Image (cartoon, rainbow, N blue to C red; front, top):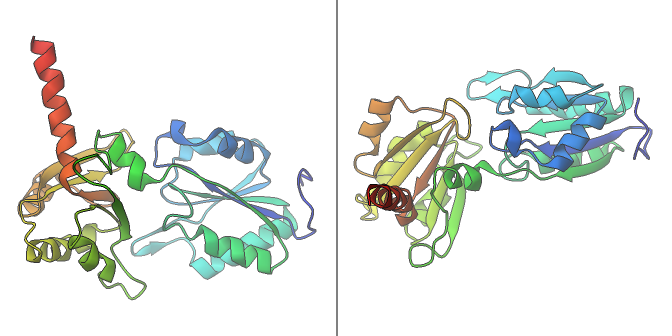
Length: 257
């Protein structure tokens, strides 16, 4: 059991953001945490190559994907506490940033309530970094002065009311976990007169198997079918999507000249 930075006999939990998928996009602090860990509980969206940094840790997959659970959240919470007592320093390795729809705050609270020391290492959120690496900024002067980041689905598995509110704004709208609600999202934005609004869907962002579709609200479902897009994907809606094509066009023009 590692004793570094451990003050509680119940162990320590560090929640670490793994970034959007590319193994190089984890922070240096995140890598150091993995190297010092005694146990690592990792999620489905974590690049498995990151586990190579775990020099001494016991590894346990606890991933949750739609309709497929290795463990329920309550079981994961209990495992954190159990591994803290038996191993010492527990890392919860989560895709993206654990405080952006990652339930990292819930797990830290549960651990603290059970006497564990807690810490957090932020990660690059897929909501911003995945569009950025496809040359889609979430804000751009003259196009968008703010952005929404929304999970499409509530605890009751219904479309989030925030989607309806966001559709009324001029902000960029980034929707996570929304592919199974795409038809409803299209209906909401169409009802707000935004059928011609640009939209991008980026599947498996930053990974080798990354796939992207660019369309308008009224044509995106056809593009999804043509390109075989599915989960996990980031949905980006707004004029900023056009930046990608404009930049590419400029680069091609300059190359020709």
